[in-house]
Image 1 (cartoon, protein in one colour):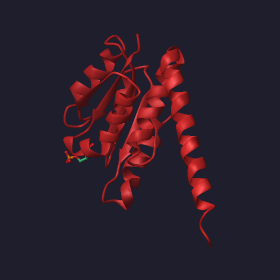
Image 2 (cartoon, helix red, strand yellow; image 1 turned 45 degrees about the vertical axis):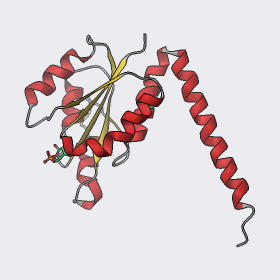
Image 3 (cartoon, protein in one colour; image 1 turned 90 degrees about the horizontal axis):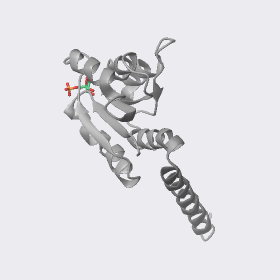
Image 4 (tube, protein in one colour; image 1 turned 120 degrees about the vertical axis):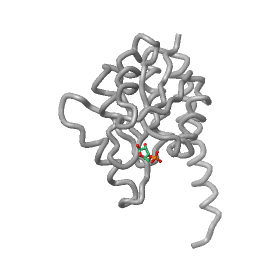
Length: 164
Ligand code: RP5
């Protein structure tokens, strides 16, 4: 049975940015749960969730947070499951604060990190992790890549009609 993905957000203000992640997981048929857990406002819940995530059937955790975005790192501290961080855009240099807070994890506790607001890529990466032990999901990911390539080829064909 395919494992679940946990999509954890530091705040409900992250939800709109994360909707593409939920949509993408759904399109691949990956089961997921969505939770709002804050590393600083509800640290005990962050510890409890991450500590129990593996035995609760999760295969990967996606953690979205902004500003001093330590959520992904804190969750990663309490689990051996892979954690993918989504740095949320802020008013500070377009979210550079969030990005660096996630990507600059000290050695020993790695966090995979996608682009600022990279919700869609987080879902694809999580699906790729789960696909290591699920051939049906792996086939869906292959089809997804094939479709993307076909779209680019169609755009290339179309641009040949233009005069520059
Ligand atoms: C972070 O602080 C959240 O992940 C959010 O991106 C940011 C702002 O949170 P709110 O003040 O909107 O709740 O913890």
